[in-house]
Length: 115
Image 1 (cartoon, helix red, strand yellow):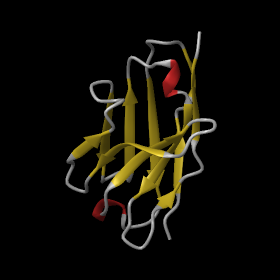
Image 2 (cartoon, one colour; image 1 turned 60 degrees about the vertical axis):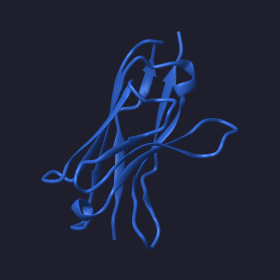
Image 3 (cartoon, helix red, strand yellow; image 1 turned 90 degrees about the horizontal axis):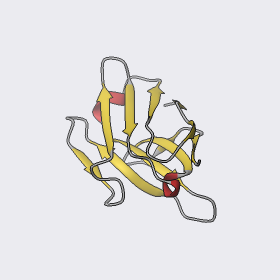
Image 4 (spheres, one colour; image 1 turned 90 degrees about the vertical axis):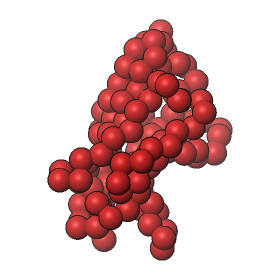
């Protein structure tokens, strides 16, 4: 069983930065890809960034060049550094362990970008 807990969300002005963190319980963390997803009001959940167990990364076009995903396998942590935030980045952000049998999910952390 894997439990994921996100932190670091909040209210930020356009152009600002936030760093999201996610800690995972369990011993399988380092073996699987991790992802950050987001869901804005009235929209479907979308993949924002993904990192493989070896550190290869992929990003949604909407966040390329602004967001950076990273992981620390020794600490069972995954991070999302978000820079140059825009109002359209407002959403609940979810950490996920991408598992062949089905993703594990955290409860999410709210990011609001507004002046």
